[in-house]
Image (cartoon, rainbow, N blue to C red; front, side, top):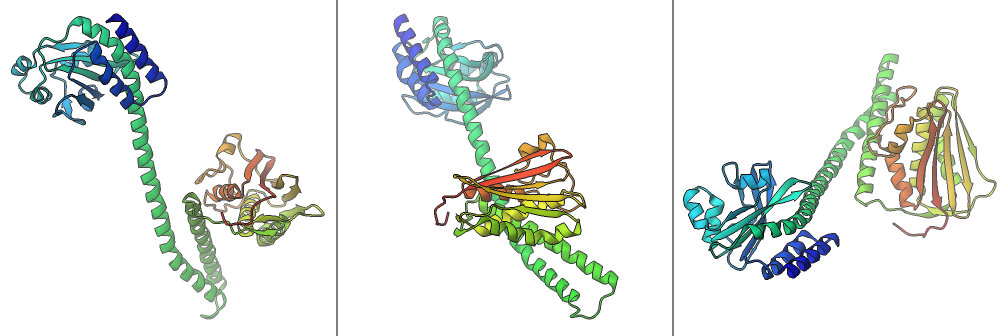
Length: 415
């Protein structure tokens, strides 16, 4: 018997260490342990809050009545000592035990299965109980203290696999819940964004009509008020568009429409679009382009969107009279664009988070300009779709330089 015991223990240990699932380990025990100890049924239960047991796994050579997920309070049960003291429990006459404990629902069920004796051992991991294992027989007086001593070794190895199974199950439940919440968030963002677009378009149209004096002359105060309304509406529209873009990117619904072109062209268009904001703050925008540029395949609207974000941020966080310098360089592998400013810079602990959605760094816009908190997250994803990468180098008080690179050789196709 000792030789068989050692072999089985060695086999189970190997299975656990090889990363076998809990079900595989449980079945291995059930199908092999009966060569050295008698049982007709094996069951495992998990400890909950130290006072309850929940049946998690069972296997029998007959009909099972006490099934998985059965839950019972053990505060007034002899199982309490198994959990609290880590002591095995042997009951060699369950029918007699039931007479003394007639309210024990688990005993009622197990006896109704034809079980007459039972050996229960704690499943301990680092001395902490994670569950119990029941060995049950249809015969009375089946188990002895010697059986419990040997089975303690098996129970210790099963406990490791059992704990792993519990952690994996909890992780899967958490991941599933997170997926559900993420789906709900995406649906909410999409619905709210679409519902807000129509009234915002109406507000923007009315603002333009007032400024065009279609409804008559405006006083200076009225004109300032309408311009404030228009500016706020533009900000909300941009926020909604960014929300929709991010939702599409995360859902994998963004397509790249690539055409041949030069990065310098997209950069110049973006500078033109941002020139008014720079002029307002007396910020000088400098562009350094190579004399000759190779044509590359890219979705130029997406590159323009990335450039607008980077140049817009550079202007936003640079004080009046500062400068923004844009460099474009090429190598055999690809194109690299950098946007450097003479602004406030980014704190070192903020740099790893700068491209996360809904993240806004501690630096404050010099004129209190508002941002959505996910412009850089969108830029990162758009560059990633091009097979490139984006990063930043910065020092507080000395400005920031944002870089992105994309490969030159990209296929002319939708992605």
